[in-house]
Amino acid sequence: MASAPPDSSQPVFRFAPSPNGRLHLGHALSALTNEALADHFGGRLLLRIEDIDLTRCRPEFVAGIETDLEWLGIRFESGFRRQSQHFDAYAAALASLRERGLIYPCFCSRQEIRNAVAAREAETNQPWPVDPDGAPLYPGLCKALDPGEVAQRMAAGEEHVLRLDMAAAIATAGRRLGYTAFDAAGDRRVVEVAPERWGDVVLARKDVPTSYHLAVTVDDALQGVTHVVRGRDLEAATDVHVLLQHLLGLPTPLYHFHRLLLDDDGQKLAKSRASQSLAALRASGVTAAEIRRRLGFA
Ligand code: GLU
Image 1 (cartoon, rainbow, N blue to C red):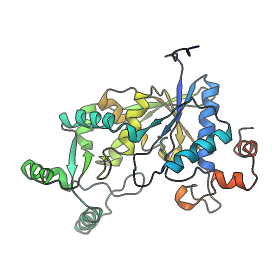
Image 2 (cartoon, rainbow, N blue to C red):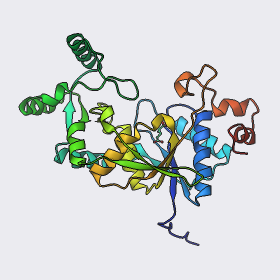
Image 3 (cartoon, rainbow, N blue to C red):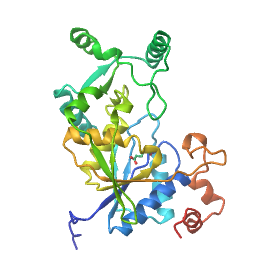
Image 4 (cartoon, protein in one colour):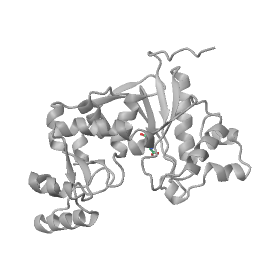
């Protein structure tokens, strides 16, 4: 029997891990929070593999994600979107921004940016502003390049990223933007965004024809995601996503940011800190039911 077409009024949730390591308890918390909220609101639950970073993402980690989520017993819809197979969708979004003069190529190396920031700090005797992740705002070196020089360097195949011209983007948006935050209790709250605190963010990397911000924004819209549930570490980044949605004519989903799990030393769990993986916990005899209980999903 053919399955019924999805009901367009049904909420759509997604869990979107990056396959650059094994999943840890923090991912389990995120996946289980998505599942609980999708159940609560009668929503569909999608899995998306965010594998734009072709050097760090590996097929065995995709397989690991599938194994771990199946073990946890989370009911995702079958099949998943892999971002690496949709670079054309991100290119179309970049083209639309380029046509309106909202992005520009930047040839700077990290070192050039560090040097420029240090020079400005020495000049002004003031600390240079940093973004919510603590990285210095891009000091705009390539924004003022002569168009002839840009064309020449591009034609010569010089490596570059594409940056959003934040001031132009905000002027184009023309008004304060926001999103609605939701929770299981039914509370809704409008949150005004301040994307300017990120400066001229990168929308396409040197090695990858997109970036996290662009791919996540385009995919949430293409997949009809209505409810984004993710950790508080991505709360500030949402400001960029809401601005991009507005510029690209895409809907803004509802957002919920869940707590983060901390290591004993108070740091956020992360693959890079070798936080205990679900695979290692499983191998040591921990059951999926215990993980659910431990994280508050009895
Ligand atoms: N892929 C991102 C990560 O693993 C999460 C994306 C999102 O939820 O927006 O951190």
